[in-house]
Amino acid sequence: MKRNLLFPLALSLLLAILLALAVYLPIPVTPYMDFQVIYIADKGILNGIPLYDRAGQLAWVARESGRSAESLFILPFPYPPWYAVATLPIAFLSVDAAARMWFLLNAAMLLASAWLFTDGWESRRRLLSFIAVFAVLPALGALIVGQYVFPALLGMALIVYGLRRERAGLLAVGMGLITFKPHIGIFALAATLLGLLARRDAFGRKSFAWTAVAGVILFLTGFFADRAWPITYLQSLFDFRNVSECEICVSLPLTIGKIFSLGFDQSAPTAAILLGLAIALFAAARSRLDSEASLAFFACVPLLVNPYLLNYDFSFMLVPLFFLAGSATSKMDWLWIAALIILPWAGLLTFQRAGNPVLIFCALAAACIVLTRIYKGNTIAS
View 1 (cartoon, rainbow, N blue to C red):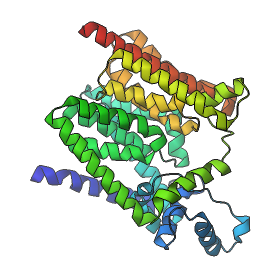
View 2 (cartoon, helix red, strand yellow; view 1 turned 180 degrees about the horizontal axis):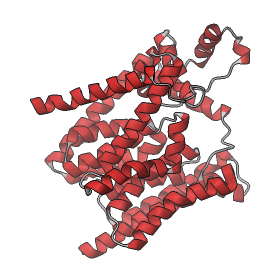
View 3 (tube, rainbow, N blue to C red; view 1 turned 180 degrees about the vertical axis):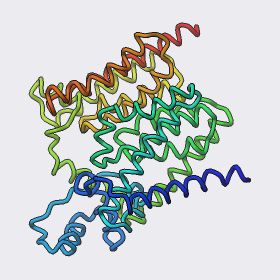
């Protein structure tokens, strides 16, 4: 009983400490970057405005700021409604304190992810991983601008930990969290669910059932944010695409499209071909779907097939990086890991934003290395 109470007590203490730091410590974090999208959405909910009612949010911001609605611009909220519900307490803070709290929460989730990914590692390597995660350029950038990748990253870490330790509850929580970034987490979610079904054992059945329960809870929670969310959420995604023409997207389908003078709307067939190729290569490896290797590969897949990606989405490169580091056996393995971390920095320092395609190359290289590791493992096992 005492052990069961230890985790919620420790989590409550951590949140209290982070809240005190956010309120009283003048951390130089600006609230007027990516963070403001979720803050405005949550403030709207507290004021009775449905989550995906962009016009209502705009009118509220205009009233609060004393400016005309015509002079303001806010982005549509592009995430599932349970993301907004989970972050609703932040909206009770002032915008500056809320931005600092969000920064601290993201840093905590990043470090917690590193701790879970490195479960079973030697102590010194685990401590070094806490420093190394901040050297991964997309993750550092996402942290600075207040992006929304870290709950889903923590979800992937929980899935790895849950599979490793056979903790069905934690695995189900992780499966729920990766839906916070559905265009990234969908492939890992589907692969893991299929893997759990294929196990045909008590852990697989329990994990699948708990994940289904988590899904139902999230679905119902969404109605608290917007009573019509199954319809308005999809409309919000279309609105988001219309106001953001993907001029700064970092995407392999779009890169291929530019070579052949294709538009954004024509990137879907390219994405489908790439996805089919990725699935075929993985299927040929005959690897288990409920494994760390599978999760590492399917964390790379959306980074290669999704047309709508921005540089911070490549924070999920941490998943294959941790897998590769945990299974590294030679100096060449470590050289590849170092290259995957250093190359994005080289691209940024040399070409600024024009160096973003380096991220695509790194994701492709990581996927190939993970597949090679899977093929080698199967060859040795046979």
